[in-house]
Amino acid sequence: MTKQEAKELLLHHSFNHEDFEHPKSARGFLGMLRPFNGTLIEANYHEVMAALRVLADDFTHPTVDREIIAALWGICHFARAWGLEPEGMLRSNNLIRDEQIQQLADWVDSISYATCCLLDGAATEAFATYSAP
Image (cartoon, rainbow, N blue to C red; front, side):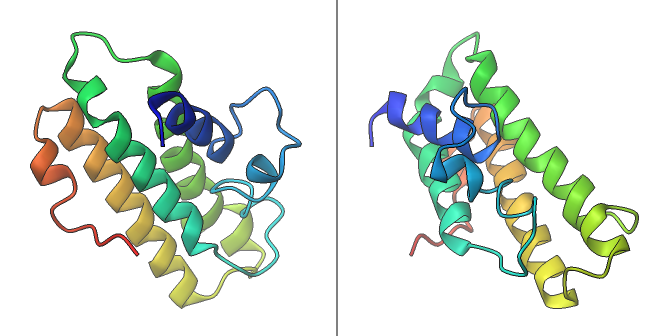
């Protein structure tokens, strides 16, 4: 995956791509939650982490592409708001099971931790606990 492909993938997963009807946007990380059909797609999590790995050295620069940061922030923020918060649309409507809540929480924590580590210059630590498929 090239850096441009990684950025495009993050934009799709976060609903920030201009082609929001693209299948990757429609069923990507945030797309799988809205509308939620009862299934979490593990491949979406792994694609986000793969994109982060490809872009890791970009985080060492004094400035980081705003669109990349917005995509990662959006993935984490909206997944929490929609799927993890008790008043979010999935939990308040009893659409997501307890084990799915834990799985989604683990994925969001992993993405946000890796992003935080990369921004802090700790690329090795960013993926220390992540296991790619």
